[in-house]
Amino acid sequence: MQYTNADSNPQLLPSISSLNPLQSPAHQFPSTLRHLHETIHVVMSNKKITSYIGCGDLNSAMEVFLNMKMRTTVTWNSILFGFSSKPGKLKEAKDLFDKIPKPDTVSYNVMLACYFKNASVEAAKDFFYWIPIKDITSWNIISGFSQNGRMDDAKELFRAKKKYCDLECDDIGENNLVTWNAMIAGYVKNGTSLISMYCKRGFLEDGWKLFMGMSSKDVVTWNAMISGYAQHGVSDKALYLFYEMRNTGMKPDWITFVGVLSACNHSGLVDLGIYYFEKMQNDYGIIVKSDHYTCVIDLLGRAGKLTEAVDLIKNMPLKPHSAIYGTLLSACRIHKNLEIAEFAATNLLNLDPVNPVAYVQLANVYAAKKNWEDVSRIRRSMKENMVIKTPRCSWIEIKSVIYEFRSGDRLHSELVHIHDKLIELEKKMKLTDYVPNLESALHDVSEEQKQQLLLLHSEKLAIAFGLIKVWVYQSEFLITLEFVKTATRPQNLSQQ
Image 1: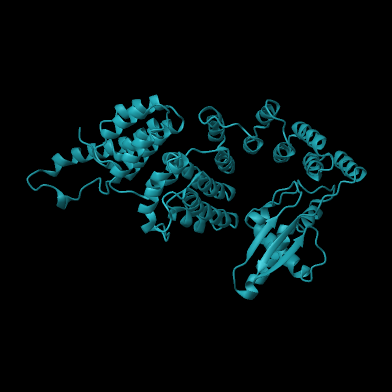
Image 2 (image 1 turned 90 degrees about the horizontal axis):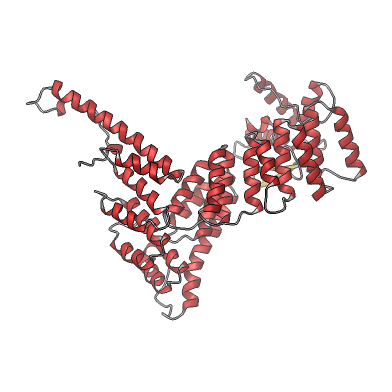
């Protein structure tokens, strides 16, 4: 059987000048069409295999694989990853690897990970030294050895790797296990701390460069990068990194799946999120925590599957905390579901009687339904229970100076200019068919008055102020939107 790399073939239709002069173009054209058809078939088959593997259906993936007349390295790597992901499939994976015509670095790394997943540490070591070209993923075996109690092997590989980093190992005694542990663990820990710092500040590119430059990564390192991408809505990269993490043989923990579920949440991948939620328990034996439930309930809520979210809460093996009911209540406001909103608010207030979020969110749902009497009742209840809604704040940094804005701010020295800028923006947005969201205005007043009230939101004041100053200083500015004990999301203006 002839194996060609059809995925990377840059030229499907040869030029006339490349045709054999002894052979008529009429004879070659059908052959070219056949090759084009075979190439498309390979690409589509590869996608099918990847999809089946992602869903854990190895049998269907293997059926597609066996029916392929032409296979690429991508094909082999995909099916090899499928076997490496299944416990007890080491022999099948090794047999498959031995049949790959031209294995690449991905092939070697998948096989290496398979040895570790099946606790064949000695075989993993032998295989590692046999790998002709080692990339950063391959070097993750250092942390794999130290995690399996093989410090001698970890030290040996760490020395071999030191030419890639500025680490001095010669003066450390062979029996000084504490120092060796500290050096290997500290090397990983310090890099991980920097990655977390970069990601929290939104410098994902810097975090990624540091991540890629680390020869040794532990599960905390992977979690830092996955969570960083997930928190900032870069879900595709977070999920890809999770795929690569498993590919290296690193076992995810419960924090990993919080990041994965959060990534699915931000992308609206309901089915995939539920799949990983179940896989976490069934395949990895991870005990589900409240953070996982919060992510899944938010995922279902955003998709409008409120009934399913309620069923999940009622069947939880642990007691729901206030964040779970708060998440459900927020979804009810978006989808205007009064019945479930009252259920969520009641339970939230039972757990936290002075939580302003419950009152405000429920009032938002009533306002969206134009139940103004119920809105007034909620307001009276807040006064009777002495519940105070802390105004939300937004900060903006311009020229190293931080300015603070609060909702309803009427004391700022440049308030007139800020309102003028907001009105200017509103007029421009209306020309693009922008319609303001007035449902969160908790007052039974005219539409025009509601629009005026929305202009006092802190994030809008901060953005307008920044736009005024950016023209003055001709420089960039950094804005931080911080919502303190509030149940409302940023309005459309801050999303434009």
